[in-house]
Amino acid sequence: MAATIIDGTQIAGEVKHQVAEGIARLKAAGHPVRLTAVIVGTTPAAEIYAARQAEGCRAIGIDYNLIALADDISNRDLRAEIRKLSADPQVTGIMLHLPLPSHIDSARVQYAIDVVKDVEGVNPANIGYVMYKHVVIAPCTAMAAVELIKHTGVHMEGAEAVVVGASHIVGKPIALLLTEQMATVTICHIATRDLKYHTRRADILITAAGKPGLITADHVREGACVIDVGINRVTLPDGTRKTVGDVDFDAVKEIAAYLTPVPGGVGPMTVAMLLKNTLRSAELLAGVKEG
Ligand code: NAD
Image (cartoon, rainbow, N blue to C red; front, side, top):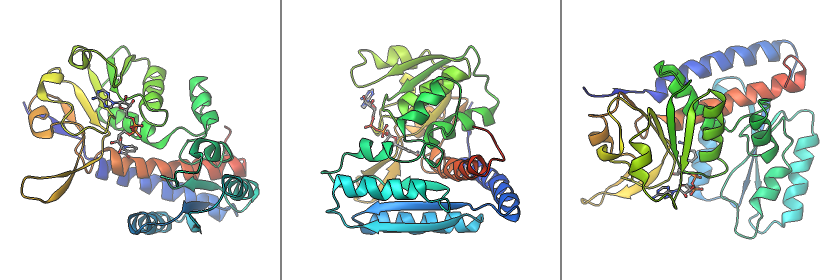
């Protein structure tokens, strides 16, 4: 039987609706909700992305501003900018657009983002808090993947979950959140000897490798829930460009019970989680919620 396709755009819409209500309540009580995005050395693609983000924020009542910095800014000056925003009481959320120019030490800049204002959950302190079950702000993409699984109704407790990809910001946080849900988690990465051996055991398979076509029907157990986090731009034989995930969608949809599409799966849900985190940051700063 063909898989149920998980509609990330629709689920994200429901989340945004709830977030908008929370923001309206907070602002009515006189608390600021402001997301400040920082971009270093703009490109046309980054500008389009930032403009969309501004639109998305304003549509649900989040005040938004973008600070564009020159691409030759020093590490020290960039960290100083971030610290200034961290200390500004009118700024309740901070987002740093990646990639940064090659001379910038991205991780050290991310460390300068105030833990509560870190709406993307990129400060390692926030990942550490997840480990200790004391979540302040969890990384957006990991939250998105787990929320989509929850939406299917598939039980995570006791399930065999396999995560393909072990990056600090995507794969490992997903594995942590699944562990919190009491799944039995295996993390695979580029040095995994027999990927198929692991993925075929998975009740829940999450792939975040950034490799188009990595997960074929042969990698998937019948009836599995498959979440495709990968975003890859590929050129088709006719020369047109297309965005695909890591999963061979057409083949895997005949085997899996649930499958996310790319685009339209984890991507829109990640944006919704960023907005949800922006509300949470503002609530924590206003003291209406505890971290
Ligand atoms: P990364 O390059 O930092 O990490 C990739 C991970 O995949 C590494 O751990 C690597 O060991 C593993 N890997 C690579 N090739 C593999 C293979 N052949 N077999 C097994 N493991 C392999 O990438 P990232 O930042 O974690 O992002 C991963 C993917 O997720 C990318 O396609 C990225 O665009 C996408 N992404 C999507 C969203 C979203 O909102 N949907 C958000 C962030 C990242």
